[in-house]
Image (tube, rainbow, N blue to C red; front, side, top):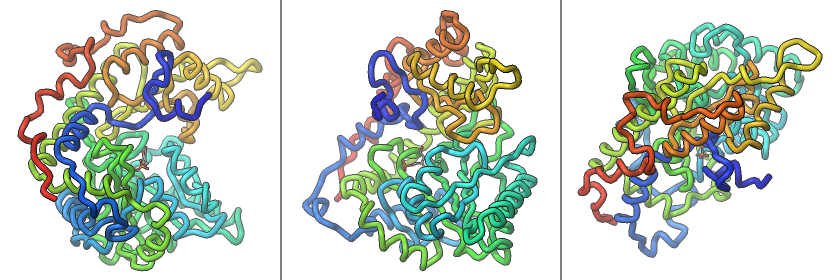
Length: 446
Ligand SMILES: Cc1ncc(COP(=O)(O)O)c(C=O)c1O
């Protein structure tokens, strides 16, 4: 199977990708805006301000973080290092904070990329933490990390747990950590002399729907009082352009850290992941245009909420269970365990049946993100992306139902009433045409 199938929405008429975390609902808005406004100068063809991003982008990101993440103490531009995507920043942090064989704690289910990001170059192990019946967002969950840390340090003499990684908002669970839980993680890190990496790449991909009124909102770790709880130099926040700015292809990510040594260490290797000037300029333009930014972020969040309700409504109609209370991200974490084969020797389905189900779906023409890649605690869970064009989503779900239940379902009948006004025959993009003209016409001020 060609490698590209993982990254494209449809590599042929036959295979639909609902596994990838891209926001197609806003890509046209961004593309139109950039096509209208982006103009290069010769400076953008040079090495510019060096390997860690332009001064201009750093100043813009400093403003953005100070305005939107509500840090208790304002972030300064020399506390930011920019490179080509958050995956790269994971690799940089693993290299900076750990020695070969060391571990970084990650709660299950864990975004599959982390495991490779830590290991590929630095040979650092993502150490998955199981929660059993404990809510991963509760204070009690910290005890599960305690146990895993102590097991790892005993099991692997000469190596150590160096950090814990929290994806907040969480991928794939689509929820945010409450402040009180984050505070417990601060104490945990201080107690064990380890770092806290907060991946906040979905910070602005949060949404309100009638289904998630009680959901905890996003609080950046930077917004929590650390005084006398944790040395701020232990905390490193990651952010990027891929998710909140619907621009996975522009490849920009950053680390925010008050640890000078960490900033220096990462900066020493950013020559290998130097952010591209056109991408750097593109993000500057969006961040500098207050009217566009305001429109873009509120529309992004509105469409995500609508997308979530659309998919969750269909799953409800199909009788498929999924994790509730989601208010962030691009996906629904769904329980397809009803379709797992029964092991021949009896007993409960496990890894073999989980892999078989994943392959059955892929071979049958629909690619969902399999929980086994996310170290899910139970087999049969899949992450389904809802931020894709509706016709594609519907086709993918119809294929899924055919494969899993062996029945042809008229998926159009399943569309929730609240979404009936959406033009399903056309692409999702049709509604984007109503976006306010002036915002898309502003010229570049470079
Ligand atoms: C939680 C999380 N972190 C990081 C990444 C990778 O981001 P980037 O595209 O900036 O490498 C992803 C992409 O899916 C993600 O979900």
